[in-house]
Image 1 (tube, one colour):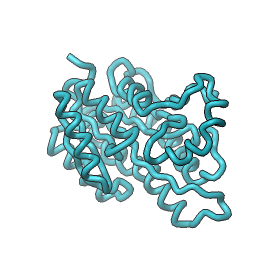
Image 2 (cartoon, rainbow, N blue to C red):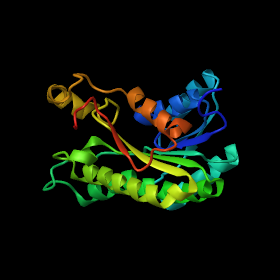
Image 3 (tube, one colour):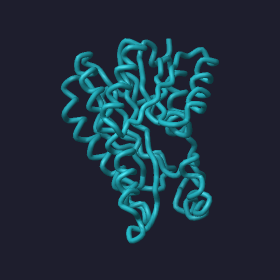
Length: 248
């Protein structure tokens, strides 16, 4: 029996990159997985097909999780499909990088909505289910930018720092119902979202990283799988970096 057998997981923004790697890893550990996507149905279908090919169970569900009504319907659909919800991974995210003097208001609003409000939306709805079950795992994918800041990313860093505050607050609120809430803070991991930035500053990234390599989406997925399982049942309110030691 694998670690997450009989558990159901929802991963937001799971059609590609870190979210897709998390969905595949949770499925490999035995969980039934809802692969949420916003626009890229074909990519989400590929993730579902890969999980099915490995003997797992998954379904793709479209929703813009920055909208509370859509997040609510998404989680209702997960319940209808699988009967329960044990693990919520708030991974949906975007970037709109620029120096503050040139950043547009809509770039601030979109990043805060996509990254932070979506996590609040999904946690709000999932918490009610998990409280009734008296069991749950909420894992928020933040960033080292939310820990240390990053020039040209005031919107992104603020959204990810907000996720850390959300994590700690929810850990205190939901802990009495046996629900753990933790945050994972990846460093620079090449994905469709970050590869252009990383290509521009890879040399400086490696200079700051004791392990002298970039991370991989699978590095993040492994930690998420651990936090989702029973071996992590006494860990809550923590922010764990997966960054090769870049932010010490």
